[in-house]
Image (cartoon, rainbow, N blue to C red; front, side, top):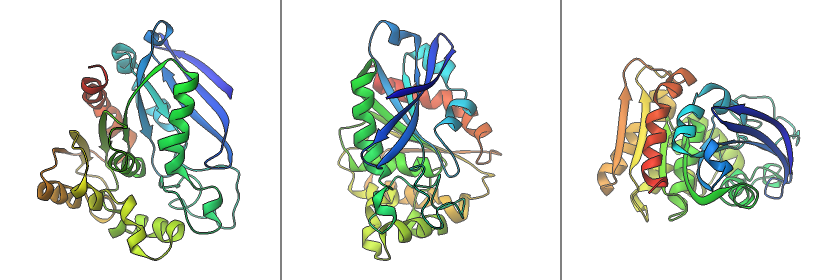
Length: 277
């Protein structure tokens, strides 16, 4: 592992770390914020998954989360959103598929199956590296934005007991029923929609093996609210299965990081109630 950069902030430190990923069979970079408490003891971790077009840096630079994370004593880990350097034909042609758009799945279709295994990377390989090389307790939560909100929900729902807390900002709730999700899932997983179920929160949550309190914030002026994000589909599935969902429709907010930065403190405190027990 190689520390690409290190920046001091709020008494803690942001590191960008490069390593070879066995899951993705390429070099990957992730960001980690270590709060000041990590100098003397192990701290819990919040994993943040970013959205389409993003890298490991978007959240660290734009969300303004470090001040509250430093106060609470919580580390934040931000993986990249897709493998890098593979350069498959057409991989960089569209902003909503391929590079920066790994959708946190394990691809089964060629050529994507060779490297696009972000689900295994996020749920297995990355936590293993973080737990081995950094002063963390192993207790963790997960959150994310847009495509990353989809990833956070899916990773939590498919791994009961792994995460102590969960939340999301404007997640793609029902990817089987929107063009972003259909494009990604059909190319990564194939045309059989039965194979898509494991990556669709609205279809998974009715059979959730555990029911951690789920906090979701969604802007009412989000351009993609109706056609792509579909929080109502997740809400209906939660009502039907008596899942504890707090869906907050934030009046006047759009899809961007001004929205995320406005409510990130409340999400961090939501996670802290579980992570700092």
